[in-house]
Image (cartoon, rainbow, N blue to C red; front, top):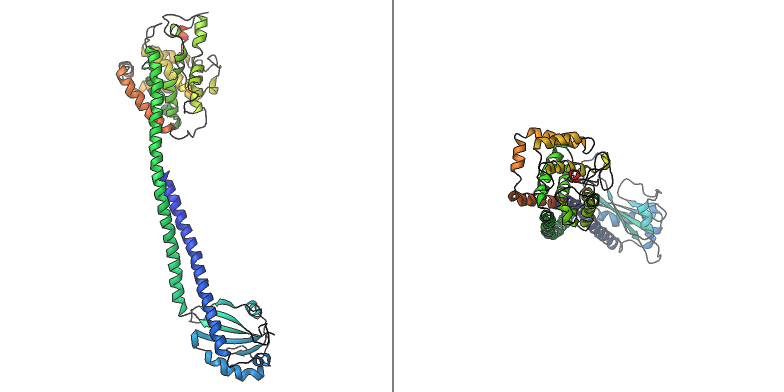
Length: 450
């Protein structure tokens, strides 16, 4: 998450820095050019004011041509001024050092009109087409106001060369861009430092929560072990079988932790079963069997406040549902039973059959596999049974290894390893919103025959 935030935020910061730098550069350039335009206007106005009188602007162009020529010709070449044209309020050219014909009326452009309204206006001019001069130029439209009239009587149209100003503008532009980008990057580094520290604190808190979650799982598993000594190693072995089945079936690896939770805690409801029923040496009466059938519901209720996915809790509730719908407590059938419950049910049944109980002796692994095959399609999901049998066939000497591995000394280490993996995956919400739930060890062998 931190790496993703770093990459995305860095790209966004650079782009924003470039954008803000460009905006700042344009503002700075506009300010510098505006100052330059005012400087040109002040220079031209102060230079021409002592030499030109109001009647020069109001007289016909032929009468004032000599005076304008004498006054304004000397401005060409000063202060980088290239051309000067004078327009009166009627749109007639009073003077021009270029090719514009003096005394003719020309269409009044928007900048000239704004200047005639009393607003100093400026704009850039493209270099001459086809020429070798590629320098940028600026047009300044200076209103001419005389004391006799509050409205401008004419406009000085001044074209200036930016050869001296352009290097300064370039320096200002790049300085503004660099400073803004650098400032944004500094701000990003400060925010990144804060986020990284917060991320480390969050990781520490998640670690503490993970350890607390592991403790919850281990405590609940140990509670089941203490309640029924004959299932002390049962849950951890069921969890190991479930993990192998999930990989064999090609299921989403994200459900491994969820299935292992169910495998470890599917018998948690037995805590609520009385000892005379749970530890009875013999078949259960119908009333006792009815009480025993409630332990999946009790497990679901016990785990209600525990921070594990709801689908795992439901899987524990449905841990004794049968493929043909004759299971309990809700009589689900086929695909109605969560896949996690079906996987755990097969592994749970196998482990139950090869383990000694008060009411019967253990079957051989080969006999247990035959029972699974016989129950496929009625009691068990045939696809899950098939996957489990393929695993068993690939294991050389698997039966002997499995039986010899059922030692209490390995139980705590296995539970701790599984709990750590569960906590690692459950530290964030599980992305698979489907019901992934477990099944449980069948008790049919204790059911009184009717």
